[in-house]
Image (cartoon, rainbow, N blue to C red):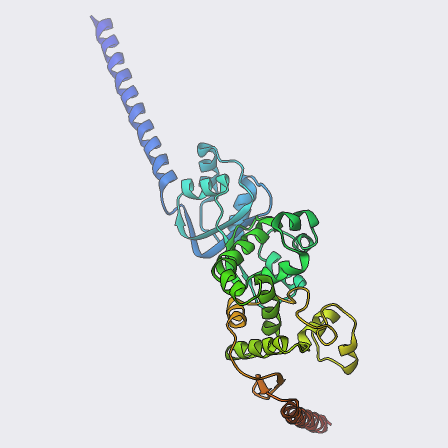
Amino acid sequence: MNLFRKFSITKTDFITAMLTLLVVSLLVFSTRQLRLSANDAFRFSEPASLQIHETIGVSELVDLLIVKNAEFDASDFKWATRLLGWRQFKVGNYEFEGEYSYEVLLSKLALGIQDPVEIVILPGIDQERFSTSVSSRLKLESESLNAVFGDSVFLAEIGISSEELLGRMLPETYRVYWTSTPKEIIRRILKEFDDSVVEPFSDEANDKGYTVSEILTMASIVEWEAKLEDEKPIIAGLYWNRIDRGMRLEADPTVNFALGERRRLLFEDYKFQHPFNTYLNRGLPPAPIANPSLSTIIATLRPAKHDFLYMVANPEGGHEFSRTFAEHQEASERWRKWLREQYRIKRQKEREAAQSSE
């Protein structure tokens, strides 16, 4: 009887212990699940960009998160990576702001779900500046992007000459992936050019007797010349007037392009033998000398109607336009007189500054 009672108590205790263990296990499991799905496991008080240059492990990711001032528990983080099975994190650019759960943050990095970055292409830039500016925002070297312009196989694929390619780098803000290759970047920009220029304006250009490439080439000169937006159609009209009259364009920017530098031109520069020098060669240069903006392309396609053939800079940052060469000479003299006065004022200030420092 005593043995039976002893056995019964032991059995009851066993059942109680098992139930207790089950409850504790469920509580632990539930607590861990709550910790895994808690939306405040990570907190970024400011927007943060995590750029992973090569596949990294848990320890490297912890260091990177600390550098980016993320607020989190490192030991809990490592526990979560083991439980979720995320041990490697992929190359890419990842944007974070606010609070995140372990599941959301870790899966994003482990699966390589990138956030795009913005690249801004400015108008009127040369090939070197384009490559340097774009590559500075991406995981690539400027040399590799620059090399695309000389890749004959790639140029044959897209059907564009090396000289014309730069002109089609339409100034705009683009959202691309940080890990994009040079060719992917170029194709993305060319698609924007096709959508924004070729598709809507090719028929209009053809109706006026020009190809899109010719409009683009003229627009690149206008882009270089025009400092004021409202002067673009006037300058375009002036150059088209010269073309229609069989005159040389005599556009200073084409000489700068031929020389390979932007500076005030000297008399001997205009005699520089080069296919792009429109002081020596009639008609349009062989290709664009820069990448014109969409507004410049439209202004070139739809120029102002006038009789201007000449222009010279004015003190306001724009140009004074003339119909005859005699008028142009008078305007040029006014500009030279203004420049001489500015030089005189500058020298006077320099002398006064030198005297006051003695």
